[in-house]
Image (cartoon, rainbow, N blue to C red; front, side, top):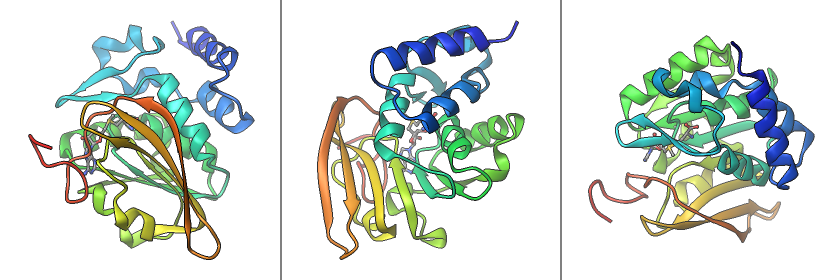
Length: 221
Ligand code: SAM
């Protein structure tokens, strides 16, 4: 049996709650099959509004958090997007659906086995053409394909990594959870045409830590 009804119910709930708002993001949520991005034994929970474990101590974020972050990011057709923290590849697929064939998503994951899991999920769902998955420390960004119209970090950082600000295009936008290793708040940063940046705070959230040169240290703070 397909998951279309469950997907539609979840989207309706997120719209009712005022979390999903824009046409682009709603359509992407209706299209991308979340069940293809969770471990097989958890498929029946794919449309519960909760994070799920994907192995290696990591999670696929809860749908409402993916919705909040994607709405804050405001990706559009043709955008070049960098994601830090590929995990399952679900957020990357949502972004790929929105940017279309004219745009592209580069997504960095530090755990090679998860990068492979995401690549497989993206291949099976036909998003692989629009998403390049890279193994590495995304706290340094990915200078090879800069500048990016949008940058999204799906792991918690102690502060905004400076390389990400440098790799953001003029008029670009960066969304990142910033705070301690236990709880954070979303930060939305925009680069103005004169190169200056404006920041505003969004909702409180709980993410696994960004581990790397401009993030937290492995096993510590
Ligand atoms: N966006 C993912 C999805 O749609 O499934 C969920 C991301 S999960 C909450 C955070 C991911 O960030 C984990 O897979 C973790 O291994 C990864 N991560 C942590 N530090 C990283 C770093 N410095 N560079 C790249 N990935 C990192």
